[in-house]
Image (cartoon, rainbow, N blue to C red; front, side):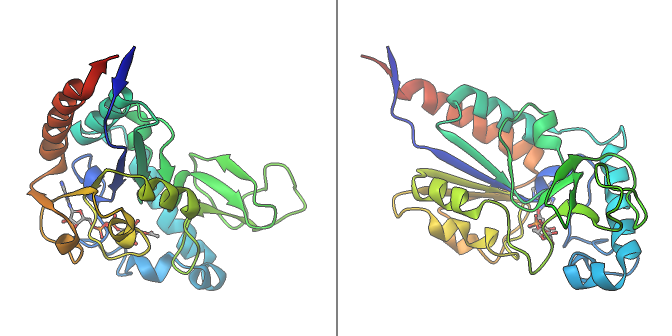
Length: 247
Ligand code: OAD
């Protein structure tokens, strides 16, 4: 029987992992949408006041994601390979991204902390459906025609609770290797995940530049995720092979 003494891995990804796929980040240059900051449109009060404006923002982002030129990049693919190699009991992928590029690269059980762009939710019933077209105030409810204007993007807005946080903290507490990729460390609770890992956990940050949470990490690798992630995964593959022992 093959036994592995490999530390459980938690990977946190942010907008930077999808930047090389052609999706803009939030806080880089050009991070504004029609003059609005994301915080101004991604919040429940904005949706109550100007639902069409908020729908327009997510319709635009959904269209951008479905552009055939937007495809998973080597970072997404390397993470999917790592998951396949070490297995789900050793690998937990939590993303702040609402795109589906991890899944398209082959990753399974991706935890979308901030929701998913290709899903809508009924704010009355909580039901969630896959969605690839534009959404408007007048879009009919899929199963309850008497409900009007209750459909919203399945996105966690500012001021709302990220999805399944208890599950994330459970994984963080057991984790022996924490890797943060392409996130600016500005938005909590995700920015605080690194501090929730146990004292012996190895913490690696992959980013183009330093972030406010960089001091919490043991290792910093600077450059594009499309280069850094495949290189790190190759290193981990070697460690994984050497951690296998016959018993
Ligand atoms: P940000 O836009 O805040 O940060 C992106 C990070 O990726 C920055 O630190 C960049 O330096 C880095 N980066 C950019 N291109 C990169 C590349 N090619 N390779 C490696 N790193 C790169 O995005 P997030 O941290 O994901 O929330 O933002 C967190 C949350 O803020 C988002 O989920 C969203 C936003 O408001 C909601 O909408 C609720």
